[in-house]
Amino acid sequence: MAVNEKNTLESQAKNNTIKIILLSVLVMALWGSLFPFVQWGFKEFALNTDFVPDLILFAGLRFLVSGFILSLFTIKNKEYRALKKKNNILGILLVGLFAIIFHYSFTYIGLSKINSASTALLKQSGVLVFVCFSFLFIKEEKFSILKLLAAFLGIASIVVVNMDAFHIKFDLGSLLVIGASFCTVIYNVIYKKFLKDVPALAVTGYSQLFGGLILLVVGLCFGGRLRNISLTGMLIFVYLVLATIISYWLWYSIVKKYDLSKLFIVKMSEPLFAALVSVALPLNSKITIEHLLAFILVSAAIVLSNIQIKHKEKSKNIEQAKEEKVYESNASWWK
Image 1 (tube, helix red, strand yellow):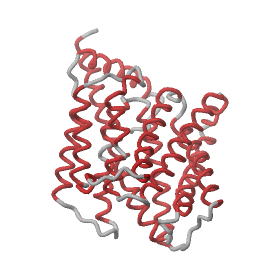
Image 2 (image 1 turned 90 degrees about the vertical axis):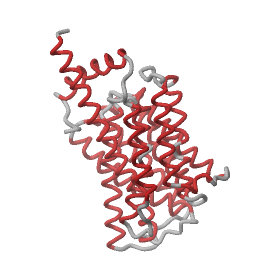
Image 3 (image 1 turned 135 degrees about the vertical axis):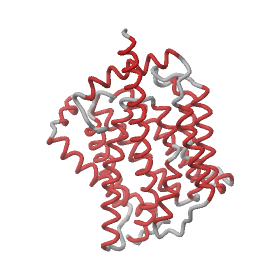
Image 4 (image 1 turned 45 degrees about the vertical axis):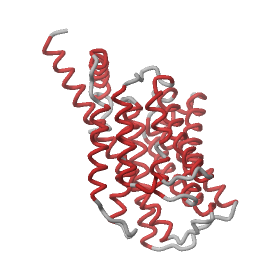
């Protein structure tokens, strides 16, 4: 390989990595914003947060609408052809089961029993385990002490913002939130291993449509209902739907092209964004010095997890850059 070509590919690999990291941070900003907006939505729709069916119904409406909208785009782009294969249908249903039904049922019920600080920490438990043992699940993943250190820095950033997270009682609520964290790992592994060749739009749309429908039916059957409809509430709901559509579609697109363990380290910035967005909303939150320290820690974690110390790793990125050069000619989701 000529020196100039090698340098070009190395430069392209570095630029692609930066693009993917920036997009994944954008996803975390959107996901982080969803939690305080959901809390605000609870107030505007006058939901009884002690009555689980209300919460399940609200989640079901959100994903049913977002899944329906995305499914319309799959028809326009003829991406519904992915459903012709039975294995793809099964994979999408499993993603919907773990990403939407189990994940959000566990999270919402858990939130009704434990505080948000403990939730922020416990929701990273499955992610931390995956970062340590990702090579056992996905052959492309490699064990790295730097990724392990980065994962602990990410956890530290969450603890700094949520000092109350140290006071965790392992009751039903805590176990459900831990279960939600492992659901996050499971649906991402399913997608990475079995649905990598399926368009991200199709996976996002159909999994949300399926998951949202099930949650809606369950919520209605057990007496869930929206107790108040207001203009502010509808605007909040529109934001929730749009943020859900954009964030999940981007995430599934990114997962196709990058190490899942490194993306999960970026995911640890999600609680920080949730805390920052809460400040701008009428939720009685404030920015503190702890937020700045947490930002520094999670930034260091992201940088540390992407440091290349082996020639094999560099060669892998160069090969990835070659693939992405072809990929970019057929898709422009990151532009």
